[in-house]
Image 1 (tube, rainbow, N blue to C red):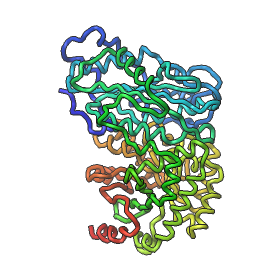
Image 2: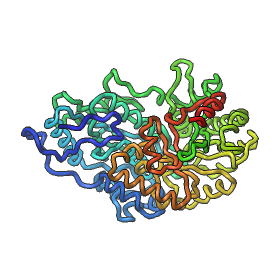
Image 3: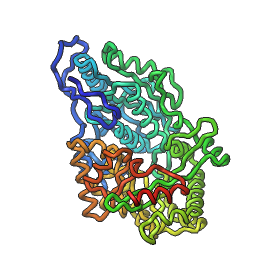
Image 4: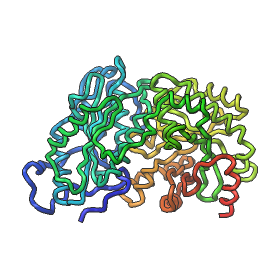
Length: 521
């Protein structure tokens, strides 16, 4: 019996493809052996690499290779192809490995009629004349890893659609039973690639095309070569940032298509509403911080998904516009200062909770961030000790200059929180985390959700929590939207929690009432 199809494909374990029971297979569906490399063991080993091994520096030597660890489940050419580090594009992958992997999925579908899978081919294009592409493609691979579950696979891919200054990846996703499951993965991919990359210290936005081929349950399985040909046919029809091959009735989120001009219009039309989401101590129930959350009430589309503002800021920063993010930051602080009388009552006793202020990737990477924050705080009448800076998952956290800037922010009185801890290859290593002046580690929702069943994810989560306790660092479990993950976070010893099961984002006017009910509960 196949396992039931997952409702959240990126968080569930698919059926093992090593199952060989069932009817005999046609010749085109038979596999020649297991693919090598990668998997959860390699991911766990990467978490244990030495501090400094995950820096994004373009030195010509891959940090993971220098540490004797595999880069990813990609073909070996991904880590060893020659070429100047500053101009190298992604090397082509091993087509036979991808075909073999698809054959295994097709074979499993023939043996288990309720099983589904998907092939995604993603083509990325850097702006003309861009340098430091090797560094950018490594970041792209890390983001792609965020969509993978045990059993999924990622390959560099050689396709005619990949032009100069471009890269192409193929993903084989297992356990994708419905169109809704597939759209969930596509939405997450688009959200990841809406954020800019760092070429050195400069933000870079990549253009993308995504072809989707769904081996849905009940459909006649096709040879692997036919699936790849279908993906190529879809790619040939797509323009920039296009997605093709999805069921017409299941569309990805339209919020991610909005850009910088839409956000500027929203600011002028007063479409952005500032709300606050409490971060709660799981032991005592006190409110430790209030995260500032922008809600976008679009004039035509209505209420947009929470990631819409961040995606639009990513588009702006990739085009070199950092003023829009700074403008939004100043506005958030000004409104929070005006709301302060209502917010002060949310803390324990006389202490008011900190304001948790998210920074964009470009803001966190700038050398003058401390000066700009100081100016914005002064204009709003706030002080550094009242603010918790929510840093995005930084690919170069171990960089010496980065650490010095973070220490300077901490010395000013800011509490520093790092997002996405435990979220695959995009997160820094445990050794790097221990060296950074962080007051809070924000745990990735996927890590907690997948750790409930035990296995390597549970081992990884236990290691993170034990290290945090030894370092005296608080841990925040995010995405606690139902009672089950909330109970798990408490049982595992996370110090703080955030999510709809505790409190959804709310306007300042609703905080006193929520607080009264929360304290009674």
